[in-house]
Image (cartoon, rainbow, N blue to C red; front, side, top):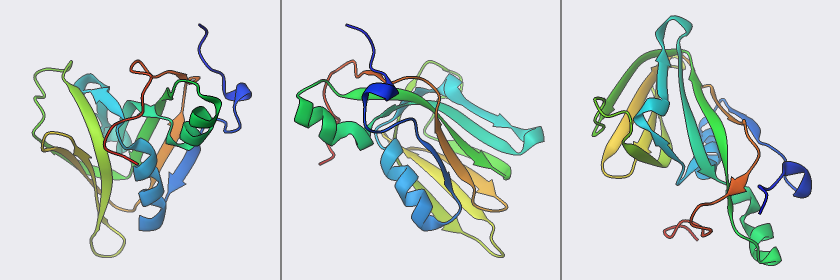
Length: 158
């Protein structure tokens, strides 16, 4: 069976930007249950950018998949946090880049004068906190959708 194509569906590749807490909540919902490895996390200190390549469940296509009785899909996407001044992690074995991580949500903690921190909350008590000068998070699909290996939607979400 061939991989799905954006052209075959009603919803094309996502290219979103969050510049406030409401926008970030939308991106958070779309990356819930995304999986990645430690090797997919990258902080480009000189560019003040934190990026991760994720395999995200296509929540925006869930209803169409259910209506058509077809398997669910995932897509590779770039999640990028701009203006990153510092990055800290906990509960992640940075010595094992093959460890599989799962994103539960993204959280915004405002600071003073537009600064703050974006936290990637991971399954198993892991987290990555990115301190920023201003909130700017992008989500950009970079591949065509592919069949979710399990062919199921994640269990804990309606």
